[in-house]
Structures are given as structure tokens and as C-alpha cells.
Amino acid sequence: MSPDEKKVYRDFGKDWMDDAEYFRQQRAVGQSFQECVATRLRAQGVDPIVSYNDGFRASVAEIQRYTHESKDLLIRGHHFEVKSRAVQFTSPDDWPRSYWPMFLDTVDGLNAKSVEPTGYVFISQKTYAIMGVLLKSIQDWSIEKRFDNQRGFAENFYCIPRSCVLSEPELVQVLRALPAST
Image 1 (tube, rainbow, N blue to C red):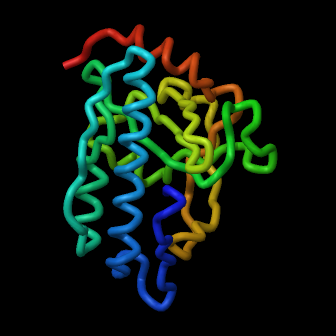
Image 2 (cartoon, rainbow, N blue to C red):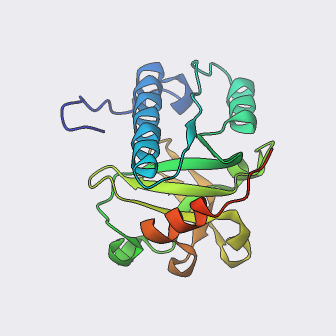
Image 3 (spheres, rainbow, N blue to C red):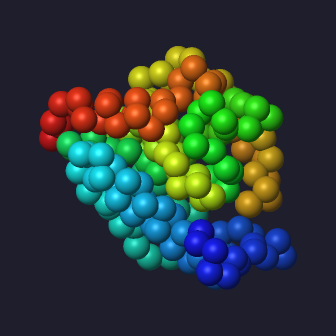
């Protein structure tokens, strides 16, 4: 979120999926960070295609369909999810120690994808630094039940150890070497 944008806080008097203003703001923030990641990668010789997800999901069924079909970036035909974090970091080495293992995604969210992503790219909302993780390291991840402060309930999350997280230079090297996929 850029400093000049007004942050919209979730209305905990409503069910999380009924808070349209908060949802729209979060969707816009997500899309702006998808663009930031794409711009950063293009500057380093990687050519991602940004996939825009449109429309407010008005029901659980629509949220499930969106989760099933969504893709944030396509890189050489490989699907990557973008996760922006309101955490200051420049690399995995200065990710706050108290936040390890790092939350990746909800178990239900990742498992619902029609096409598993090749990986995830994290971007700091404070420094715009990026780092990533590849799905092929899933055997080293843990599942932890944690409280989701944004949505107001507990959920199972995939969590990743430091050993699975690629720094920006490592991630770029991996992305440049990806074989084309259809």
C-alpha cells in the first residue's frame, strides 16, 4: 500500500466476506503489488504476465471458484502467486525472526487451486523487496493452525522454514532458467 492511500480497516461487525469496501481495497492493494513484482522482475530480465482478477465475490461459492481459478503471474507459462506482506524485509536473512516459519497460504486455498502454482513471490509493502518459494519444497513445510487477524477466525496455514525461501537474486536466477510450459 502506498503511503498516500487511505487504509480501510475491516468491519468486524460484518462477516469478512460481506465487507465490500475492505474487499475492494485489499483487491486493489494486491493488484498494485502484483504490478510492483512484475516491474521488478522485468528490470532483471524476467518477463511476467500479470493476471488480473476482477469482480467482487458475493458468495462462498464465488470465493471458492475464484480461489480455484486465480493466477497472479505467469512466467514462461508457469503460475506464481504474489503475497504482499506488511513486514519490512530486504531478503530472507532480515525477515523478522519471530515470524518464522513464514505463513505462505491457507491449506484450503492452496489445495483448492485447479492448477498448482509453481511458486510464490513475497513482496514487502514497506521496502518493495521480493523473495520467493517453490512448491517443490512442500515436503519441508509445516501446517499450523493460526488465527487470521484480517478475517477474524482460525485457519490452517502452510508455513515455510527459512531454508525454503529464495532471496531475490536466487529467485530471479530460478525464474530465468524455467523451461517454457504450456
